Image 1 (tube, rainbow, N blue to C red):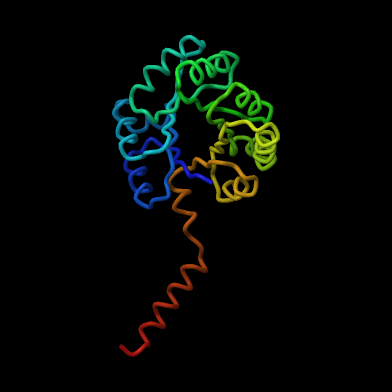
Image 2 (cartoon, one colour):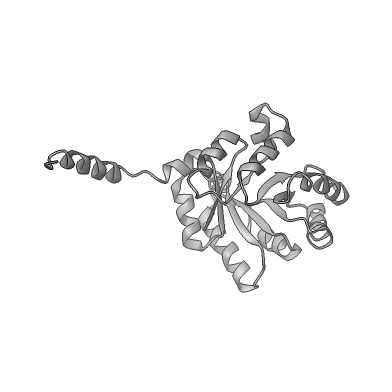
Length: 215
């Protein structure tokens, strides 16, 4: 399973990339706004750090507008992927971008398996399902990731499934169990994945015992 960072924080991306475990980045307008920097400057800098896909958002509401915007955004770097909303107009734009322009798309804001199916059928390179917001309204995110993976595998779609909006390691574990292709997580969750109290205790004990060994 690939790991993407869900952030617009360039330094956070740089730090995670230094581990050798980072495969890509997803951004959104809220992430970029929090940086206080110009949009293109942030995206260019992230693209200079990460060799994998970097998703950026198209905000137009019509298919024609999305295509024009995507063409402009894709010129930033060859590995920029365009985030397209799960709307009728968005699904019209996906094949135009993918098939006719060679621009990869990432259909976002998917809250159901049927939405994921439509995005796959439209030909999106990536389909992004949202987990924590579902849990907040009482639905089980683990069911969604399982269903999305089954649909993709049953019909041999080429789309890679991205699971995002994650708050806990349990969300990551659910994706690992389901065979999801990619998780996009905040940097703080990435660092939490390294930690376990028994690991810390074991290392501390080894260090303590090593001091007793004659040198």
